[in-house]
Length: 407
Ligand SMILES: Cc1cc2nc3c(=O)[nH]c(=O)nc-3n(C[C@H](O)[C@H](O)[C@H](O)COP(=O)(O)OP(=O)(O)OC[C@H]3O[C@@H](n4cnc5c(N)ncnc54)[C@H](O)[C@@H]3O)c2cc1C
Image (tube, rainbow, N blue to C red; front, side, top):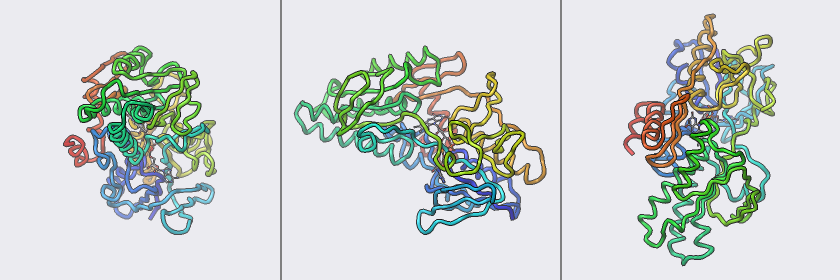
């Protein structure tokens, strides 16, 4: 029996395995997913998890529960040697070992990009994992409790100051959701008023949400500011030592909650520990059919998709463009990958991946959002409904959709 090994059970890996389970005939191949986490994280719900409008466990899709015919290995792949068809595995318990594969799928996603900023590692929390979203929420709620028992002053101000660094999707969504949560919590804290809150969104570029146009991006800035927040554009975090935030603009303030969402970096295992071809950004070079390599030099039986791969964007009018790293593509690439692997195993024809964007939707807090599809822009509550509705439909399995809706 052929061994299909999938590295990473996130969006792309989960959907590849799920579809393979449905398509493979009995005895045709065995599918193995290697991931240190026992669940696929539905990352688009993490801002809502931080705000508490989606339960943390509903943003985690259990691999054992939903991939019943797949072998699961709880561990991290530390190296890939396609020349000898093996991957090196560091299990969550026990010694490292090598695993042979006949077909390899690399879907390790990206990691949070960090910089050597003083205090960052000690003070800031990311927003890429369920545990981080829960930690952000816990910190805000604990800070409220502590602030309510203090008289007005420096310490109380620090506890009620929230800083989010990074104005991309996850930063803006996380910021908007935290702002909603904090504003709603004021109702339960008669000791505190809106003016006690201080919310800062820090973005190095001159605009936020690069996925939407300039005008909708500017509208989002305005809408956050109308809710009492500060948006610092063209500004970088210089230091966060001891929770004292120093910005490149010269502004300084104390902040007891710092959230770091300043972009993604290539997964180190793909970037540094493989003999597979990677581009200058550390992403796997893949062809339009999701096979690793180029048309002239394909790597036999190795496939990749999602945030760790530079997938040609056949729907883009720009020659040489690659698909943007988002869930919309990762899900569809996973499905296409499963079909291509099955076709390849049976000597059939593989097809290129092509997807025309369905537009972008972002939550800006409870009941607020922004949506853009080409030149159509929808703001406010209808956009939030579109965002929530899309993700309820997109979250895998009916059981999970019902749970998210039932919160
Ligand atoms: C806060 C937030 C909000 C987002 N909102 C949206 C949105 O609204 N719309 C949208 O389209 N996209 C959104 N995204 C982006 C989207 O979630 C990602 O593009 C998508 O998850 C990428 O899928 P993937 O399978 O490539 O990687 P992931 O889903 O990150 O999965 C990678 C998997 O690989 C595993 N892994 C990593 N390294 C190893 C290793 N060495 N060995 C074994 N396993 C490994 C990880 O544990 C993980 O399970 C959001 C992302 C974040 C963080």
